[in-house]
Image (cartoon, rainbow over all chains, first blue to last red; front, side, top):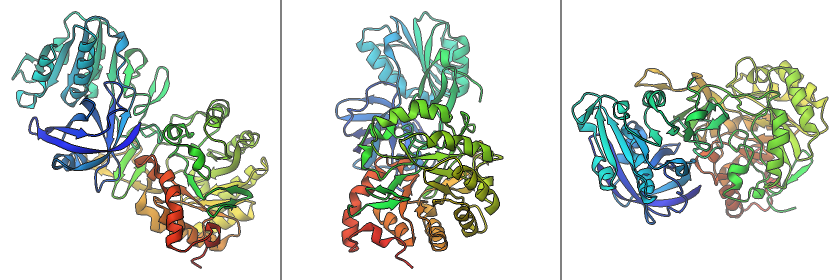
Length: 244
Length: 303
């Protein structure tokens, strides 16, 4: 974990409610895809945890959906805004078990963490397939980014307005060695039920601190109690308990 | 003795700053980012006789200048705290730590305190009779002078370490409860725990927190905490630890002027992991600004 100041250099709409923000600063604490950052927003008490879309030596890029007060304020931040950010939070995805043909499944705002993961897996020479699930055509973002990485991309829409009609599971009848997923919990459950290999799931929870101190985001797993922010957000398929 | 040192129930603290229980785990998340030996001490995660998962999630709700939590005393139980957590803590913290204890019966409190009494690392027992987030326990002991006194007597009977009773603000007369604890043998009083609060989500039209209600903390409660610390410190002779919304060196000094010998910092740690270190680093500058030579001189100075 590292606390440092970042400067907004880009903040633009990808769809009506989804935005992409580039934050320039020290990205050295971000060590794995699937990690998140936690942003202080002026006037709000708690930080806002957002998953990492991509990072390079100079900047981290996030993609976020405007859903409440915090993300509304973020959406209005002009370039030049300076933010206090905690970076390098969470365990991230373990890429050593991907096999040769990993499958990445992202739904809605679960899509962004899949990008850095796909990029790293491509660097390792993997044959990466990606399923991106959205409700409808107007909500689709980042399809081209994954294509530019050289991934095999399937887009599903719930209403059939673009790509394959249905949920992400409609695209899962392909050959893969391992899978990684992030998205709303009902989607994660369907992926869990349909998957034929081992895999890793990224979870969301309301957080207090984001770095393991408050126990605000704990969940039960096969291997004991885990804090989504510190021991997660990524859990392996075999340790998940779905009970609430 | 340094300019910032204070004496808390017979043990000298290098400074009065103490991360509050439940906001600092068992220390090592913070030891990863700074040397936690700069702290006066810290109060570790509320520990019970048996392991507890706590409440369902969501457990956290944001508020104006604060937050509500309903964690529900998640902890691995006293045996595991002693066998696993405290040895790990010993590697990054050389000072005496404050053990925070909760229970669901008088016997529970005594059992857990007796176990912790044998641990040399533990300097003080902070007995929490004020957790608002567990049903049938915790706060119910802190809302009546008789029950709080009974817990105090039971714990005092099993330990020679200083016993500090942590009180709830969710009562009509906190002074009566503090006095009952003092008469029952408490070596100190800490206050305030969180205020019972609630938020409702306008989209779902349901409570934000699964437990519906939870403990409200953060800068919003600071004036209320200062008032209660002032009232209690004036009514008891034992040392008082002040807490509730403290987030700056100025807040620490204000709490001490109200009567606090030491000051706990809670919610601030969760939004700024360096909060306590920043406060300690800033204290000398703020002391100089207000012409304070020794912090121990200002305790109760507002009287």
